[in-house]
Image (tube, rainbow, N blue to C red; front, top):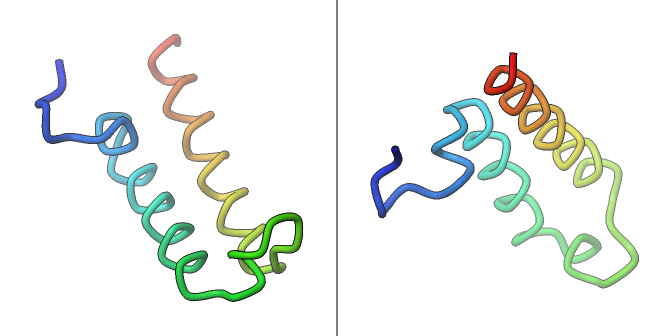
Length: 63
């Protein structure tokens, strides 16, 4: 069970939380990522890393 102050990402594991923070931190400072439908290569890579971390965490829960 997770503590109320934990986010879903943190509850799934430190690598997932770190990937999420990196993606959000980049998006907050990147003009292209803040524009709907635009984005940038770095933002896409960071988001892909987060998605992979979440898939891995879910697979570990099931398996």
